Amino acid sequence: MNSQLATRPSIETESEMLPRDPPAWVIRACGWLLIAFFGIGLLASIFVHLPETVTAPFVLVPKDGADPIQSPYLAIVHRVAVNEGETVKENGELFVLRSDEIRGLDTQFRTLSEDLREKETSLTKMDSAHAAQIEIKEQEIGQAESEVKFREKHATTSRELVERMDRLSQSGGISQVELLHLRLDLAASEKDQSVAQRTWQQATLERQRMEMDYSRQRGQDLAEIEKIKYRLAALKSDLENSEQNMLSLRAPYDAVVISVAQRSAGSVVQNGQ
Image (cartoon, rainbow, N blue to C red; front, side):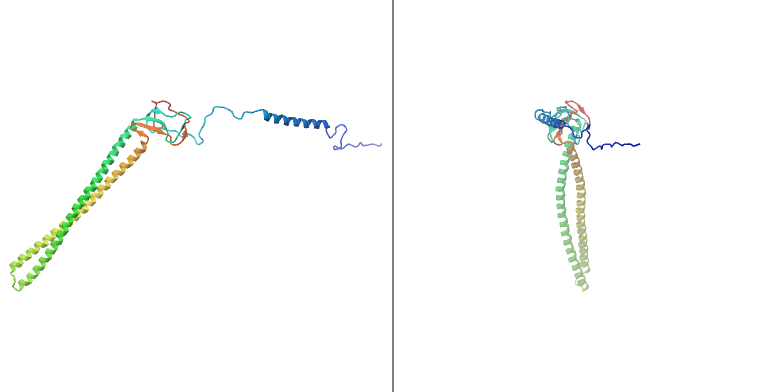
């Protein structure tokens, strides 16, 4: 039996039922549609205005965080000088506080200042008195030194005289009694020389003692003055921008006030609040 096999057409072969190329009117319609969309978009971009900004409530917050201003003492708010959102300059006044602690520190500062003046005046007077005493003592030492030199010469002369008279007495030129008187005079001269030397040494030692006492006392006074100055510097830093019992809190740099916790005078603030 003879059989015939039908040949299947290829997929790439154009079929009469499904042509590969669309009709020309479809292509034209798509082109006009794209042109229409482009024209509509162009006209919309020209005539239709879209809002560029949006209005809404907001709060500005610093990038690096806020820097709170705190009270260094227990105090009462005397005056509020700023409001929220206000721009303040460096060293601009923010608050004025009233505190008894500030008054106490101010009193202590005044007392220490007076003590410092008295210490410095006393030190100046002590320097002047010491200089005068040293001058007097130098004169005493000079006189004692001159006395020592005189007594040394006198003793040397007396000793030479005794030696000569001793040789003369051996030849019978002078009596032993006269020689004895000369030896007594020599002994007295040597004694006076020894006394003069001790006087000079004592005056020199007294001068050294005066210098040591003066140096020790002056060192103590200078140490007290430095302590007072250190305490005054600390109090001056604490009392900066204050007067009597009033303290003015000021801005450390140019800034904007974000919030104000104490809005009215008469409020009590704690230390660090």
